[in-house]
Image (tube, rainbow over all chains, first blue to last red):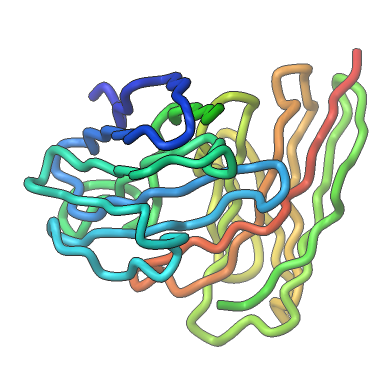
Length: 119
Length: 111
């Protein structure tokens, strides 16, 4: 298995532009998580999905952020308009459900992250 | 979720055993203790999970005393490649829909 795949790996954009981050979870996993990591705030959970349905988006900073999961193999995190304070590394993680064969049902597998820089 | 407290950083030398202790005084009956490892420019990676006493896998050991108010991650004979941030998390297994990461412990292994 290729693991969790994120794209792009690096994104540099200007303030006010729309940014779309993409994630492909591990096949068979039924939960997907979006995190943001900065030096100041550490690793923060933004939103997570179970079976493609958003369960908790309380970590989403504000209305400029939105996330979708149209099917079990794809999710997007969109920032519109972007601001310099959005600069961070954004991680996507997936987790298997019951019967998935993972050692622990709550083990999350993280992708390599997308480093976003907003100028 | 129970809050955890860990040292901000630790230093070690290659070949030494490293023990990182995490405090979780408010741990609940159904909570498990999980450790993740994060290398620079990578996402966190699951290391080990336990409920009580001792758990060992090919990477590390986890020691949990009877009162479960703390836990110790033990890394045998560390190498330079073990330099990373180690996070201790506490929460219900299976129903742990959220992972609340603290500041973690930055382990720096020197030659």
